[in-house]
Image (cartoon, rainbow, N blue to C red; front, top):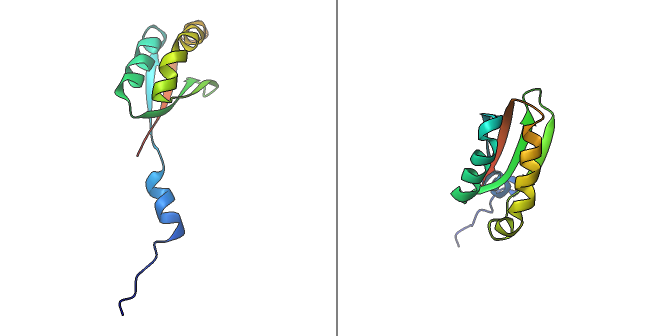
Length: 95
C-alpha cells in the first residue's frame, strides 16, 4: 500500500501570502495611480504612506464592493494629497 504524504501545515499558507510591492508616487499622480491599480483587478489592499512612513490610508480592495464605494475614498485621497508632496503606495496582490 502506497503511503501518502501530508503537506506541511505552513506550506499552504505560505503559498497564499499576498505579494507586496512599494511605489513612490507624487501627490499629482496619487489618485490616478490608485484608480489604475484597482482596474488591474489583482490588488487586495492599497496602503498610502507619507515618505516618512506614516500610514494615511489602508484600503482593502474587494473588486465588486469597492466599485460601489470608491467615490468616498476618492474624496479622502484627494484630501490626503494636500498633506505631502510624495507618497509611498504599498500594494498587496493576490498570489
